[in-house]
Image (cartoon, rainbow, N blue to C red; front, side, top):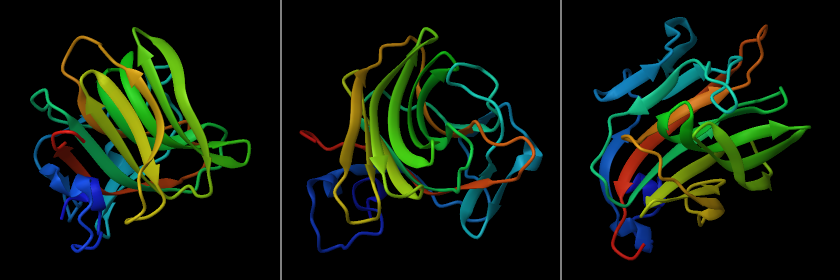
Length: 215
């Protein structure tokens, strides 16, 4: 089953994304597979439990700062049209508390797609930081903090997408150009969590796919 195109979807529903080729899947079954790398790892504040990766939402940022802990990156892949997807579940309470996906070169060059809490409401936000200059390229209010996110990378353009549950169509949440030098990698991260309260972000069903021609 192609988790990028139809995570847990029906095998009978032959959507075009079902032709995408799965390059990597991570279901967090007891341990991380090889090929992951932590940035500023805080070993006491992440764990794998019940088939999910749980990362504590802590203070620190990569957006407008370079001190976010437990940024988790995949090994680089050969340049091609790619998409990464993941399920995110959390209960944010701080303004700008967030979690989601990265297309990441370094702390000053990345695209992020996040589930973010702002003034009592939840948003899906796509934003780019390039040469340490940040730009929000899409911001959509959504009804839940628990969501599926997907980043599509095609010919130097990155598109953020979201849906509430498997089987829904993906909705776009902004597209931007991204031409930072280096080897970009997909990743998972949290940002702007509380200092004196423990809240866990749960990641599940991470996958990277090569997009089918014409998708």
